Length: 178
Image 1 (tube, one colour):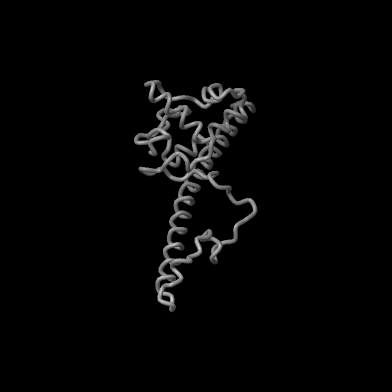
Image 2 (image 1 turned 60 degrees about the horizontal axis):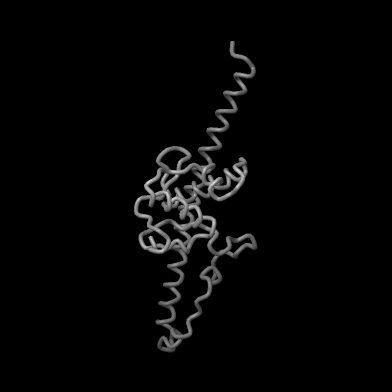
């Protein structure tokens, strides 16, 4: 008959696996949401441009087109907790510059680009924390892990082994654009 401690450990392990699975699914859904949001914004802008060209005054309003945030034109209201500029990670695509990312994300990419340039292997988040001069305490390491996982989900980084991160194939240095 299994011990009580053994049963508790089994339940704890099952709960940990479920939490990890749900976090991965949430990251995947967040990435899809970001792509859909960008696509939606592009369609709203395109519709505005078409409306301006087809306006009854022969499209004369095209020169004075309002280029405000597309969400202000009947989209969902922006909450006061809305993401600040550069706080979200867009999905990587050819030609996308690192400047679209916040400083924290750029710092991670720069450290990993330096490693790649020197032909060194991937880094763990604990090694990144030490490299950045942070205390390698769990809260700092987990914050870096969260950012690195988000960069992996968006295609900026690769994770060749669990917990080890490197630049994804095709992502170039910051001065080059990608």
